Image (cartoon, rainbow, N blue to C red; front, side, top):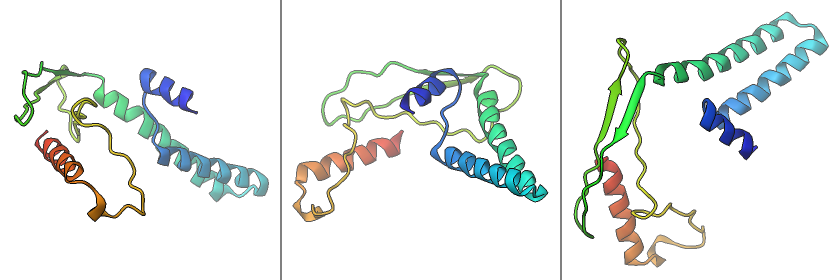
Length: 143
């Protein structure tokens, strides 16, 4: 499954988990429609497949004419604030709406958060962990 997802991510669009669930439901409804010959089940499964196709095609079409470039990061020391600039250029004549830009913090600046153990209460965490979490939150809110 990871191989298929990776291939789709590099060649086309990355499918969401909810799209897979909705596709499974549509397949089940189509199977039920085939067995019972109920027209309304064909309509529902066809509508779901059409929505999935639209959801896969439109995002790729809307992002096709965008060019995103991250400018070089100036050297900083520990404790200094960092500014990261992104340039987004629309190469088409049409406006692009409903875009959300994420620039994830590199691993060397903020390692990914691990799932907390339920038995580990917040009072047992070290002050260094609390400081890192606070800085990561502040850095993400500034981006």
